[in-house]
Length: 318
Image (tube, rainbow, N blue to C red):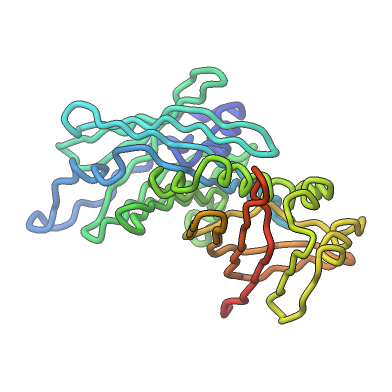
């Protein structure tokens, strides 16, 4: 059986949302004939342009504290050959760099299953496919085998249609033949119409604030909040602008890259509300913390610029 090169393995880790590097897993035993379904149209829901947010585990199966990298960008999904195939053009970027590639999904009508194939634009090499299909519930599961260094592993890739406008992709590795799994890739696609609902200047301000928060760019944060800014924390404490910025001045204070889930936008002339759900992970005074939150920002237009006047953090049940 051919083995996957270390070079292709690295590429697969960094681009799992569009297809993972894996040797095809042995075909699953077919269910009874009366419930076999034709899955040729399974990817129809995904055709179109999507805003993509990706989290990649940089040290999979290491046994060490997880190191995640975050990326944002777009995915363009096209139908080919009357739905018997489709392609994905992935382009995302983040502090750790850029991921670009093309995924080709092919349907085998005889076996009634899909193969997912990926090529990175770094070298144009096509990785071996992962193979599987969708159940009646619309959830797709695909399996393959691979190597992580010299260690043989299994790969599981799951596609879930959350709603008509949102899809989730999750890749996991197993070093014990599927007894346990470690997730190393989480991607969320949202239809572009939801992602670009904001005016360009406000969307740019939202992105700038998120970047500055992770980068500890105090000058940018100061510029993006009003002088009378008020932050209400999830423990009901309140901070003004000076106290808020003082946190970022602490040498050991750091917020990890985050993804806003289920984003909400409301705009009314010179005022706007943005927010959503997120898992906030940060380090303060040497202690790592994590909290599931709903966040809401109130923005006001001052002159030709948008600035945050108020932020509310609400803790969600664990």
